[in-house]
Length: 202
Image 1 (cartoon, one colour):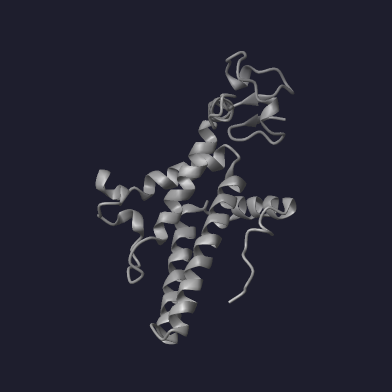
Image 2: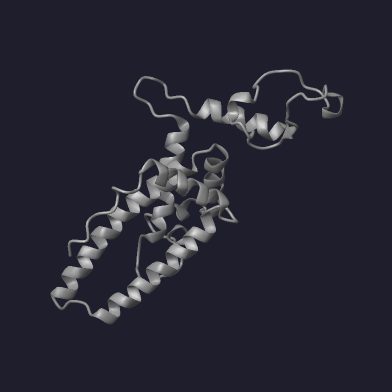
């Protein structure tokens, strides 16, 4: 009931993509009304989610995958640097195209949230990062066993990793944490994360 500028409480099924445009004050009592933001997001979601049926992925799927890769690239590069990877100027960095691209990536995250796909994005990030960090841990274990690195070096590396992970999460995830918690609950209820972590075999 009432006006909804954002996502309708009952989902997008009740949000018309075509109808009568009128001032809310003149709407009949008890009728559903939607703000331009809600209708615009509904239109965007409808046009981004269908796949072509010919093997092409939807625009939303491509957006999620690209955004996840951009977030994960924050952990690339020299371990001694606390500065996010997306602001480094190197031959492989997107920064070459125009400086710090993190605000653009954050806007992509917000678009994903508005379109109701945050659980999919989080799943993509968690699964991919778990596999990458498992490989990283195995390399450290081999180096420690072979005497090429020391335990204090490993502890400093872990401290930097945790600090960077906290910075990345606080920068990209929605403020307040409510949407993130809800998305994680969705993934947990579906059992989507239970099998992504490798066994601790080293």
